[in-house]
Length: 99
Image 1: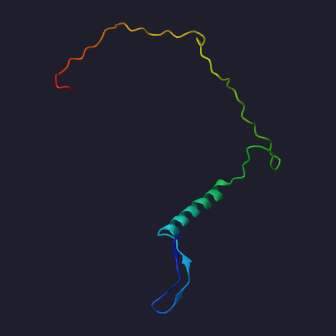
Image 2: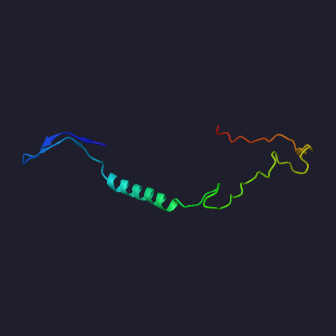
């Protein structure tokens, strides 16, 4: 944030040392403040995930139903590796340009 040093105007008024916001900072601050206020106003409901409130019963907690590692049929069998059907060297003809 820029600091404006003390100075004297042309009409003789003395201006004390102060800070000035950069250009556009007031608008951006107002937009950010509006968004934050909206989140607080609209985002804070009276719902609770656990515990009792005003005679309400406790909500069920999620339980883990998966056992890791997940094993598929044929997990213990070894996989069949493919073998190439052809095996010969590939010869690229030279064009003579040296590239």
